[in-house]
Each structure stands twice: as structure tokens, then as C-alpha cells.
Length: 189
Image 1 (cartoon, rainbow, N blue to C red):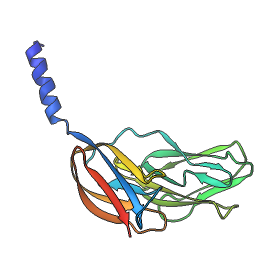
Image 2: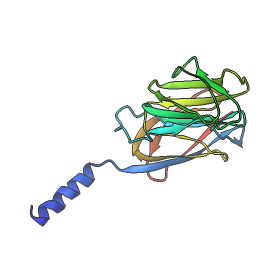
Image 3: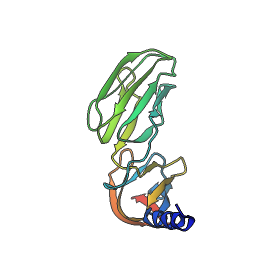
């Protein structure tokens, strides 16, 4: 193929590829930084992203880590028991329902998350243990860190409806125009 034609094909391909931007922001409640908030964009026509084949919800010190996990539909979540006691992990309502049964220290169970929604995860033996898993049908999502910050990487520029959720709170919904340098500050009263 002549070099000029190759350059034209490359130029057309780059023009057809949507421009991408990172969407960064903060989550807060009553003016204080909020960790563990899940923020996602509705994107029904977005191409599926390669997502991690697996995510991890660990059990140690009679707690789940992380407390809030967000994954894309189709992700298999590993549930290692890195504690000093038996655990029995389950979720019986809302999003993905499952029951991993009783298993000892050092054992890892996994489960594919194929149903969108919020799963409240518990241990049948230790009632103080609780975690949340959001299974999302979008490639655009993030969980806020300890300082309330989050970044949704490589979003195709355009207008989106966004949603934000926090443990114990309501889901906030609004719209945002994602362009280079766009920020999103999510605030619960």
C-alpha cells in the first residue's frame, strides 16, 4: 500500500475513534470526605472494556476488605479466607445472590457476578461482618478512596447520566458533560 494511503487510513481511523477523558472528582457527606462511594456513568452503547478476570473480597480480622467493591458484569470475585477462623459468606437479596458455605482458613472460594445491582454480603457466623458489591453494566465506574477522591479512566467524551451511592445513603442521579478536565463533585447533604 502506498505510504500516502497508509497515512490517510491512519488519519481517518484516528478521527473515527472517540476522544477519551478521565473524569475525576470527590465524594463528600455533610462537607466531609467520603470513602467507599461508588460513582458510575450510564453508557448503554459503550464498548465493553476488558475487565479484570477476577476481583478480591478478602476476609481478615473478622472483616471484609474492601468494605465496598465495584465490578463490571461478568467479573469473577475471589473470596479468600485469610482470617484465623471459619467463615460462611453469602448474599440473599438484591443484586447477585450466592452462598459460598462454610470454609476454613487458607481456602479461596470464587463466584461469577452476572447480575447487575447491589449485593449486601455477610458472614453467617459473624454478624458484624458486612460488605457491599456493586455489579455494574457499564465500563465507567470508580470507588472513592479514603480521602473521598475517585477517577473514572478513559471515558468517551460526551454527556452522561451519572449515579452515586454510599453505604446507608440514597442514590444520587444527575447529568454531566465529560470533556478533558471535567470534574465531578458528588455531595450528600
